[in-house]
Image (cartoon, rainbow, N blue to C red; front, side, top):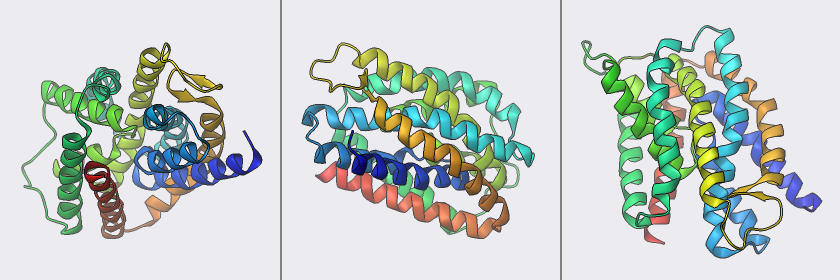
Length: 267
């Protein structure tokens, strides 16, 4: 791997690590298009690039989430009981997601994501208050929610914050707690998704040197090193921002992600 590619991966890791700490997202939805671009420029096998970008992005979240959640936990913002009830469904869904990704039509999937993410962004930007009586569901409902979060995250290589934060705020969880708890959920999502991508990609023909299944190890190492360093600064910034400002930032990021998914759908 040449020095220019190392520097680009370092820059990408620095930015996405900060975003992970700030918004409770693993940075995956931001990372995937850039990794795709970089691997394309290096003439990686065209039919494998997107799979490798998603898998590599997901694997970096294992390290980013640990760094981010440590900073949030110090401030007492992580709702560990919520993590406990969502995690089983997330582990199952995150294993299934990469497998489904090889089977489904990408147009309908990308279009669904764009509509869902755009709706979530609008709700957050309007600062529409949820019903005061609405609460997080009981254990079976949380298992189902965790499974959906895991499947969608595994499909697109994301840490799940683009779904879990709007879901929790819709259920009257404070935005700072939702961001912190989402950061903690990033690890089980990334762990199960990474193992799944290794398993389903292990015998894929044409993988370039340095690959472990669909994961490109040089990119994983460089991006993770940078993102682990910057994630705590993002978390610190999140707790310094007022709730309305944090919601606006998150809504803008969601709109960008929705636009990207629309681009992928109609490309």
